[in-house]
Image (cartoon, rainbow, N blue to C red; front, side):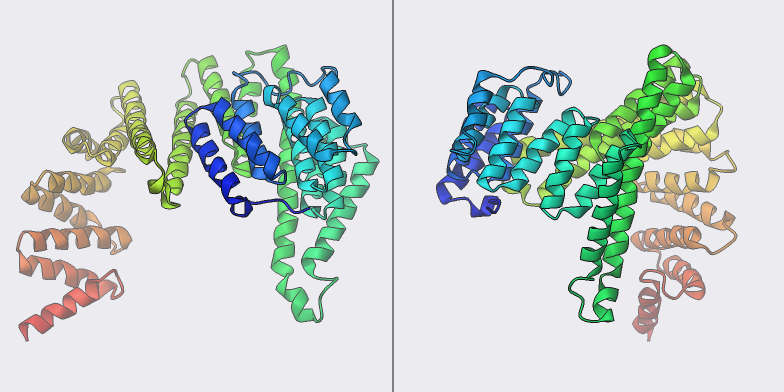
Length: 475
C-alpha cells in the first residue's frame, strides 16, 4: 500500500495534523502525541506522523542515551501484538505505537511495528522501524542485515549498498554482506545506468552522470563507516587514558570529518565537544586549537540561523508563532556577532602586540555595526604590512557610516594609491571612492575614479554605463 503524504490526508485528519505540529513546536508533547495517534487511526500509512511521534518521544528521553532498554524482555503487550499481527496488522501497528511512546528505541515495539507494517503492506514503515533500531544500536549487524533485506526487496539499492558497506566495516569477514553489497551495486548500476530500459546508446549516456553520482555516494557512506570504525578503535584507547591529547585530537578530527560527510548537527556538536576537551587538556596552549573550537561553534550557529532563514523563506511568516521564531533568529544572529567579537577580544588580550589580531577584531566589530569601537582597532592594525590596506578600506567604511565623509575619502584614496596592480581589490576600492565622491557632489572626482577603472576593465559592474552616460550629459 502506498505511503500517505500530508496533502493526501483527509481534510479532518489534515487539520488535526496542523494542530499537532503547532503543539509540538510549543513543547505540548502530550497533546501533540494524542492528535497524531488519532490521525494515524484514520491514515495508518502517514509515515511523517510516525516520524513525528518518534521525534517527540526521543526528545522526552531527558538526556538518556538511545537504546537504554534494548536488552529488555518483551512485554506481555508485545506478545499479544505479535500473535495478532497477521489477523489484524493495523491494530498491531497501533499497539506498537503505544509502546513506543514511552520507549522509542524498544526492540520489541519496533519489531512489532515492522512485522505489522509488512503484513499490512507498508514496507516504508517497516524500514522506518528498523532505522530507529539502527540509530539506537548502529553496530547491531542483525538489525542491519534485516534492514538490508527490506531495502533490496523494496528496490532501494542505494540504501542497501550503504547498509552492507556498514556491515562489512564492522565485520570484514561477513561474506554474506560482501556478496550482497556487490549484488546491490550491480543492480543499482543497471537501474541507474538504464541498461534494462535503454533503447539506444543515447539513453545510456543520458544516465551516465546519475550513475557516477551513485558511485560517489556509495563511496561516501563507505567512508563514514570507516570513520565510525576508527572512532570505535580510538574510543577504546581513550578509555585506557582519558588524558591522552593525541587520541582526543584524533577523535575530534574524525568527528569533524564525519560532519563534512553527513552534515549531521550531532556530529558537529561532537566535534566541538572533543576539540574543546583537547583545548582544556592543553590549558589553552594551542591558539590554533582554540580558534578551531570557535570556528565550529560559529558553524553551529550558522546551521541554526540557516534553518530558521530557510523556514521563513518557505512561508514561515504565515505561522501563528512567526514572531517568536523571528525573535529567536535575531537572538541567534546577535549571539553569533557577540561570540565572534568576544573570541577576537580574547585573542587580542592574549597577544596585544599582534596587529593582525587587531584587524580581525576590528573586522568583527564592523560586521556587528559597532563602527566607533572598530576605528581604534583598525587604526592600530593599519601599522601591519599584511593588514594595512584592508584596515584602511574598513576604516573608510566606518567613517562613511558615521557620516565623516571627508575622512572616509582620505582612507580610501590612501589605500587605492598604495595598491600597485589594478586587480579586483583595487577596482572595488576605487569604485567605492567614486560613489563617495558622487554622494559628496564632487562630480569631477567621481568621473575620474570611474575612468580609472574603465580604462582597465570595461565590464566591471556598471562603470561603463556611468562613464558613457557622463559624456552624453555634457554633449
